[in-house]
Amino acid sequence: MTDMAGRILFHIIMATLTVGCILLLEKLIGPFFRKIGDRLGAVLFRKRRERAREYLERLNIAECLQEDFCMPIDEVVTVAGVGTVVVGTVESGVCREGEQVYLEQEDGRREITLGQIDLETLLRRPDGKAYRTEHIAVSLTGVSQGLVKAGSRVIAKNRE
Image (cartoon, rainbow, N blue to C red; front, side):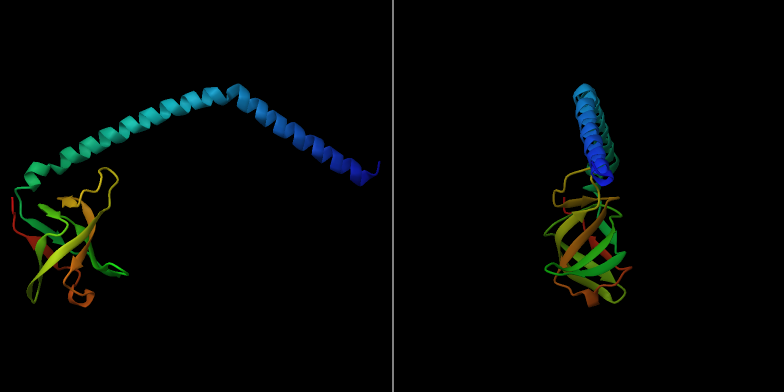
């Protein structure tokens, strides 16, 4: 046998032994790790559910429904297929997709319609609404990007 053939045979044997060891280890300790994984998954799910409950309590939706809506605009962008989108944190109240609101700027007020609301949280499911303290991106209907400036506010009177 040549030196090269001996090295190739050595590597084939080592690879076979390595794969065999991995399969044996998985068979021996795999069930143990799966059991730990299941327990860890249950703990993580329970913690996520607790964080979501705490988040909803902190939102205080009943109180938000009594307040006028106000969101200072931090950023204005244009999204292809969507149009003008503003980004900000809801300061007070609640807003809903399709709601008639006002864009308040230095040069006056303009009536606009809220489009799709994109929540920037994973702690609650999107439902077409945004509440006080939530950071959102929302599309605006009836206004072009050039007419909206950062620092402006989106406002609405409470309709509840």
